[in-house]
Image (cartoon, rainbow, N blue to C red; front, top):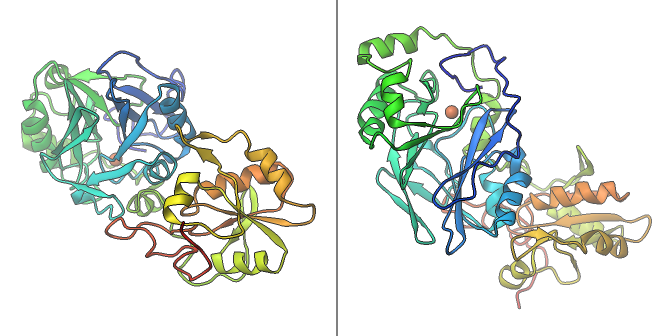
Amino acid sequence: MEETGYSDDGKSIIVHLSTHRIMTQSNHVPIQLFDPASSTYTYILADENTREALIIDPVDDQIERDLDALRQRGLKLAWTIETHAHADHITGAGMLAEHAGARTAAPAGCGIATAAVQLHDGDVLNFGNEQLKALHTPGHTSGSMSFVWRGHVFTGDTLLIGGCGRADFQSGSAEDLYRSITRVLFSLPDDTTVWPGHDYHGRTQSTIGKEKTDNARISGKTMEQFVAIMHALDLPKPKRIDEAVPANLSSGMRHDAGGGALMDARPAAGYAGDVSAQLAYLWWQSGDAVLVDVRTDAEREWVGFVPGAIALAWKQWPGMAMNNAFEQGLKDAVPAGKKVLLLCRSGVRSIAAAKRATELGLEAYNILEGFEGDPDQDAHRGNRGGWRLHGLPWRQN
Ligand SMILES: [Fe+2]
């Protein structure tokens, strides 16, 4: 878990906030969402007029909650944004980009190569007619950023309520953290609302003015005193760091296909298994399996399609709502005794679809890498695996 300044024992659990907690409906106030497993706050900001929105620090386990929150308000997700490469949870950015059509943005200093936009200090992201400004606030990690929107600042793990993030891993620096808090964040107006990346005690927000006077770690402290406090913390290694940081360097997408052809199905939790595009093609051509493309109509139209595959969207615009015809369509498409192979853009939606197909009694397989594969260093798809890159049949209208 991330460090809090109060409880480092990992036992602080907030029970009075539900995962569906949603703070507000009014204009120009962020929607605050909470993940109890990691005590992470995720924020949705929206332009009330154009309905364009962005999300800060989404969590992979909360994708459905986040998509629901967007859908309920009729919001179109333009951006997913990270404050840093997290050590305590895996980001939902890559999956949200795929499900909701958002673009990914992350601090340039965090090494998140899959993010479409690499943010530098002072950069501004537009969503509708609203603007979010990036501030480089190193210390918790060397690339960490905070984000300012109107009278709000989203501080990630740089400044927490009454505390701050730890600075002892991921090229963190207590000296940098002191400078980022006292010179960058504390130069914002005192009435700026502080929205932290975590809280372990049920607190939801603070202000710059309050943190200047009440923050146990930093109020009235010299840099030397602050550094001594931080060095004396002697915290355990975050539980999920070995798993979370590598995953977060690719926006939470796991590159588990290995690049080569996988000519055996690999068992998976919740469905029959994962298969390479090449193996899927063999099964399909031999008549052992039905191939179902779960992408949207628009994706097939614009990116390309597999002639002869059954088109059955898992989610569909507007709003990427569940396609109510999916289950019946699947039952109609797959004869008894045949396997079903599920294909999406990069192998994420098809996992959800394979799990649902399994619940419906089918022997369901996810096709690794999907039609286009994961994005490359330049955020272009089609160069890192997928049905099309492997030379399997496809067409474009
Ligand atoms: Fe963190």
